[in-house]
Image 1 (tube, each protein chain N blue to C red):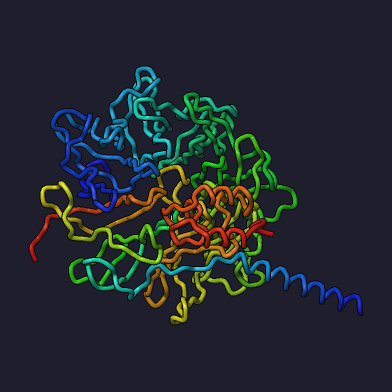
Image 2 (cartoon, each protein chain N blue to C red; image 1 turned 120 degrees about the vertical axis):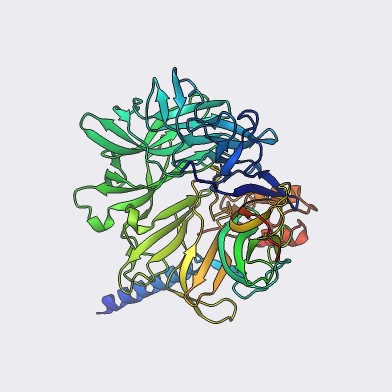
Length: 132
Length: 447
């Protein structure tokens, strides 16, 4: 009986130690943005949904989001090069497309950051600009 | 799909400014006078050297159904034609490229592109697989080519991406056809001019759990540290069906090793919950590697209390083979005292290898970026980080030691991207605080 009890205690201790060791192997979450946060930049409004989340080696995050913006409702954001806690606006729906003869960005479909953090590749559908 | 007009362009941001790489109606360099882009496909490859590649449709003088698609990439400062439908197939006499089908090009960190294309002419095949620099691509495998394992390469499944690239080679999945039937296999091409192809796993051969019964349908994922990740189901006497599939890692010339096995305890879930079949196409198993020995895994679980709302889990496997719990669906989360919400979906990106030009959500530190959606409609972007990924391990070798100290001292006084140089405390510089953090973490990172 004594032997059996010891075994149970030993098993319990082993499990406890294992649990404590395992606790360090659980990822922590650092929140970058969530629904209801003010969307930085000139679209205005707040974030609704997110997609296309990517991460570079420096810990910078880029993402596409839908917003409640009064001007437009989708765009791209990324965390700052110098401060991963700060989000900066990249480009948004209805913004002019460089060197396109007056076209504007439509809905944003994806975003990505890579190791070289000063660059962001984006893809956006284009549509003719209609004056509101 | 070639006639579909997609009014989308490719852009990039450099030093804070958005640049247009190509838009429909723009000139298609190298395709002939007056030829323009009709559409640019939206699954872009984009590498660490700011280069991009995609498949395009062309229109204009001389363009017809036999030459209206091509692969373009940023090359020597412009968006240049890599290879085009109707071009001669390099090294294949009397044969031209026919069509790219569903395939989208990959773009390696070294600037090499990789793609699938059907061929017509003297060699008339529905699929062939290529890799190389523009103007110097070589065939890795063509349908009907003899394989190093006997038989010939069979037809290649038309996925968007069918390969994975690294600076040291490429990995892909392709069947061997023999007079007695077909068997699936995972292959590695060595890279370089020879592009020597060798098998990593073949159905019917012996693997770590028995004989390979089925190679999983996922595209293998290869990385800069020489590993290739794939899934398989095994057959062996006494091996239960509930434990017969696994996610595996193999380096060329070495035996495959199990990273995660069906039937393993689903770490982070309750007692009795285990990893479900990882080789089944229907079970959502996926993986992504980085270049420092980590693998991000998504798998379905089964067991007590598991239903369709809480059946997906995410883990990483570190270079020592230890498992780390990232997250799961169907669990309640609260961020810093905010309301508790139930996780509906977790969405990382998996890509096809860190050097393939297709993004994934795990970086070389083992951090993982996720989009989380809650059942109440809320959503969040989070970065998952391991507490045990000890600050101070600058060279990511699993220990904080003299090598890290030397790197920190070499970067002393510099400012740069957060987490680079000797920035141990992630404030963007390398100073006495970083030195203190490094010395405080001295020793091995994991027990």
